[in-house]
Every structure is written in C-alpha cells, then in structure tokens.
Length: 230
Image (cartoon, rainbow, N blue to C red; front, side, top):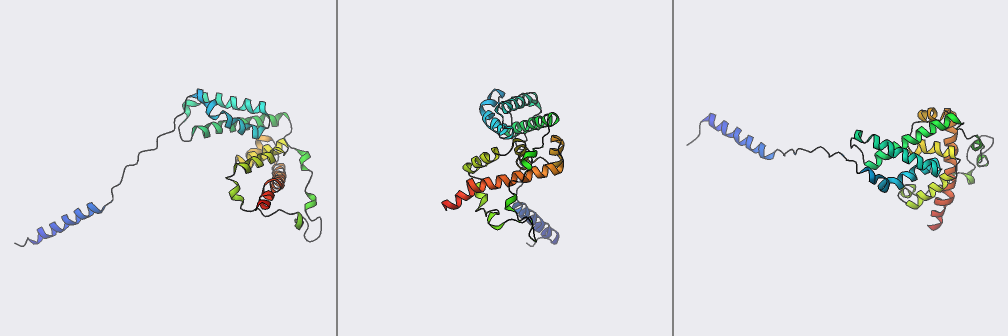
C-alpha cells in the first residue's frame, strides 16, 4: 500500500531529523578548572624558601637583605592568603609578592641615596668602536660582537644560567638591579624610573652598559668555549 503524499513527506522529515540527530557531534560540558589551593603555610619555607632566597639574592646581592625580603614576603602572603584566588601556582604567587617587596626596597633606597652608578658610565669598550670618519661609532671589525652559535639552545642549559649569574654578579650592584628589573622581571621603563628616581636617559645608559658587559662576559665564558668544544 502506497502511503499518502502527506505521510510520505512526514516520513522523510522524520528520517532526516533522525539522521541529523545521529550525525551531530555531542557537545561535552567542560568543567571549570579547579582553582589552585594554597598548601599549609608551615610548609612554605621548606618547599619554596631556597628558590625565593636565590631569587632575592640574585637581585639584591646581599644575603641579609635577601633573607629579610623573603621573610617579609612570607608575612605578606600569610596576611593575604584569604585573597588568593587560585589563578596561578602557589610558587608564582609567592614570587610575585617577593618581587613587589624588592621593588619597595628599591624605592626606599632611591630616596636615601642616588641610585645612578656614574662610575660605570666610563666607556670601557670605547676601543671597540671606530672613533671617527664615515664609519664613526661602528664596530671595529675584529673587536665586534661574535656570532653566537644556536643561542636558543643555551636557555635550557643549567650551566649556561650559572655562567649568566656569574657574569651578572660582576656588574655594579645598581646596574645589575636595573637590568634585572627591566629585562628579567619585565618591569616597564617608566615604572623603573619612578621607582629609582632616575631619568630615562640614565636608565638607557645603565641598560646599554649592562648589555655590553654581559655580552662580552658570555662570549668569553660561554659562547667562546662552545665554539672550541665544537
């Protein structure tokens, strides 16, 4: 028996809907990420103390001050624990607090003494540049920067970072602090100038000298040795 025209269309629609229903992908409901919870504060020193101390020491280069900053960071973390929203790992949260404490220290230091390290402004690398003529201020070829072989690979090498820390420790303390604030911690230049009460020109000169000194030290103690080993 042939179904009526209307029932035939109805049958086709039902079949189509059934087919579509089977072909449509199921959308899974994603559960919101579980917020990170703080561990027992009594374990913070054991779990994060060494890292935080090294972080502070690399920036302050004074063990006593570094220890004081870590203690202040732990106290601030205890007071602000209820405001922890779990958006970052506990360690990152503590580092952020410590970073703010170090910045506060620099602000206070800049009010008491001049932060500009004028002695470092003497151009110890002036002999590496052409003094006059059409190529004035250009690199003297044989004294210019070396080509670094695969520098990105060095970033995953712990020995490289030890070499970097050794080179950084040879910079004047204030210059090292400025470099770490800008290039390592990513603090904006204007914020650094306001924090340390220095001009943008002074900041630029200090950063330039730091980069030059670090480049030469790394070429001598890391990249130059890598070429020899190859």
